[in-house]
Image 1 (cartoon, helix red, strand yellow):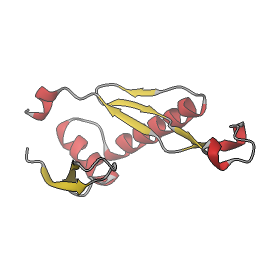
Image 2: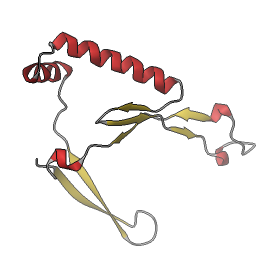
Image 3: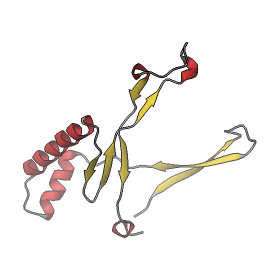
Length: 120
């Protein structure tokens, strides 16, 4: 498995005068639901429509769990959880955070794949 990436330097990014290095991954396009369904069908007896039905139900369960404040664990894959942010108190006239200042950022993904499965 080949992972394509570029290494970049940012000069004085934190005002310390030091370089900061970051790595940018170059991802290939993701597999579509149809492609995934066909690939699963080729390796077992499940039909593409069965795969789509299960994926749809997993999506519904994940949304329900996240809406209830739970993390969602997909076995052998990882966790989905919510991430929140808030308006900084310095931007508020009274410098206090209330419920109206808290907002949902985006779902966080924590992948727990075993490295040996990736051929590392």
